[in-house]
Length: 145
Image (tube, rainbow, N blue to C red):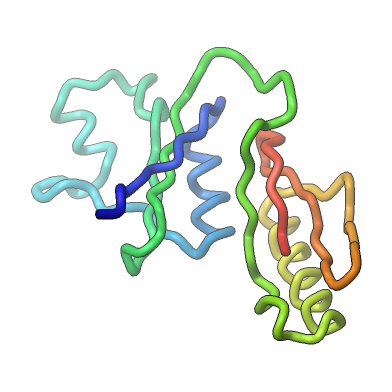
């Protein structure tokens, strides 16, 4: 039996990170629990102080196949390179001609930059491979390939 996973990000602004990654991955914010019009209403009813409402946020694959992502507020900032990163596989794979893959990757890089990502290291290429190393709004590394 496969073990389901959730990927957790430590961050300064969970709502902002969740919004970025939801757009980047075509994920959705889950609806509030039954009986609550919004997550803020849910928190208010439970007596959670308003200053704690952005302590965590989650996003989900709308089809339910991919892992849930969870963003939790931590007091310390990022200080070093990630030991693990996400690869966004957008090019169609090795069966697609390299020039067509490059065009698809570069189009996705432009879309992600419009959402707040950066690509300070730019594109990298090896024989038959092409990818762009990027950073999300809180400087976490990820690749688009």
